[in-house]
Image (cartoon, rainbow, N blue to C red; front, side, top):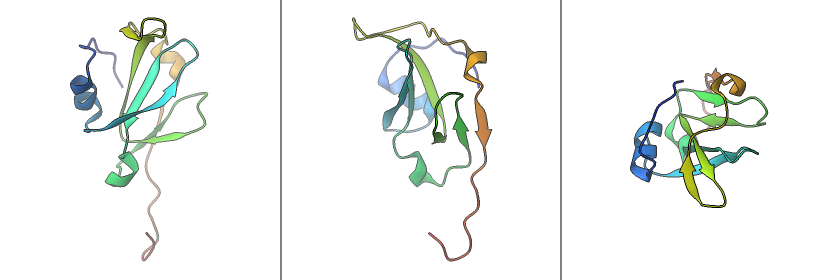
Length: 99
């Protein structure tokens, strides 16, 4: 988990997340947006993550960007990294013969 300055474009999001198709995982009340790998669950993920206040676990990596809804443009992230309380989880092994 780290904070980075980026060029706000799709290719940058792909590189940061490590994928070639993203989806919105969550939009925070302040306008910040969490992007995640759209097909992360199908890639035999090595880890998941959970963000405090979001009742969902995401496969793989994600990136949070700031957005200005009125302008539909990227801005600095408003959410403080320490307030996210991100937890990283390992996948539960499947029993032999399942899935």
